Length: 178
Image (cartoon, rainbow, N blue to C red; front, side, top):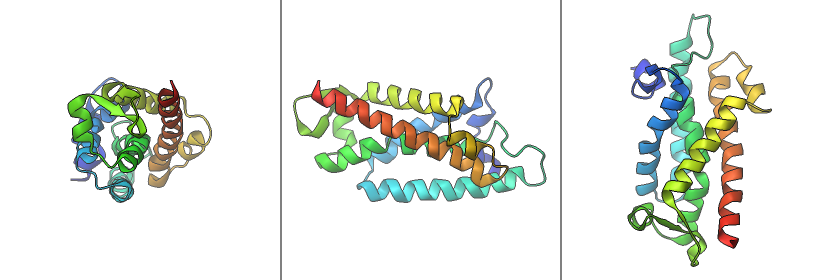
């Protein structure tokens, strides 16, 4: 069971680039959580649940092994992607609308004004930003990555998600003013 969770439905076993496969495999989950979202608290509770679940699964999958962060463990990528997409949760809460309506129209109305950015574009940009920072690992991502614990495994992607979310927010705000 822990292997199934840690590899996110075994997507982390795909080669090459298991982190990219795990990140891709997280997108349907993120889309569904956006559809069923009941606001920012949903994001916080879901993120906390994935963090604790990932920490637990990673602990058991790395117990008594030399490698503290095997490449097939990708539950941390799921959490990082979820955090990366947090600006969309904020926008849904602010607009008092749902992602199902937005995805139906394939436009994401930013702050309920006439400016819109395609939902697919937002998903691609968010995915790309997260993968970029997860691969490059600037500080503080590299600091967390150097921890030889399950917390370090989870935290490096938390930091990559936070940095990506901040940049994604900037893109969305710039898109609003253009």
